[in-house]
Amino acid sequence: EFFSNSEKMLQAVVKSRAASTVAQKFLGATPFAAQQLRFIGGDKVPEFWGKPSSYTEGTQFLGTPKNHLDLIQKRPLSPDVIEIDGKSTHYQFPIGAISSIANRATGVALSVGFAGAGYFSLTGSLPSILNYVAGSWVIGFPLKFLVVYSLSYHYLGGLRHFIWDHYKIGNNADKDSLLELNVVEASSKAILAAPAAIAFICALL
Image 1 (spheres, rainbow, N blue to C red):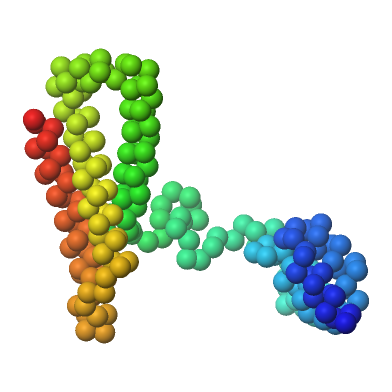
Image 2: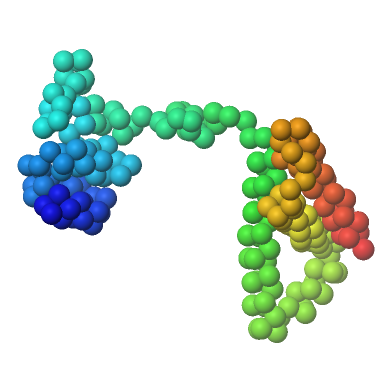
């Protein structure tokens, strides 16, 4: 019963240093608690990492520096997106990743754009804004291009993801799936280029 209660108490402990200290104070005397408390803290490094404790002699005999916890906190994750210099990336983004991120970016842009259009419509100033844009080719052409490109790209990108999620076409074992690298690259290039052509034609109208 004691171990059962201890387990319930451990499950209620939150991921914080203060909670870990309290748990160690009340449960640290039991072998069960000593075995479990080493994981308290979630993704953070335990305070006693590498130090002598009830279940290990520590790693001082290996030459572990006294500030090893600070060094661990500064260690970059692997694989990390950003290099340790903070300026470049470890890996080059494939075109499939770029097209997928762009699909989300266009969704955010459309949400902001339509929200703004709705606001100006409620204030009654939308017609005058549209007339001004239509009368200026310098402003109207790029604006129409961006709107049509975002709409068409987001639609095509969403359609591709819908097909990926709901239909099984081909087989990975036979190398003819829609998720094969070469197929993903081809579809990514298509949904990046096709909206540009559509947007250019519509912007000229």
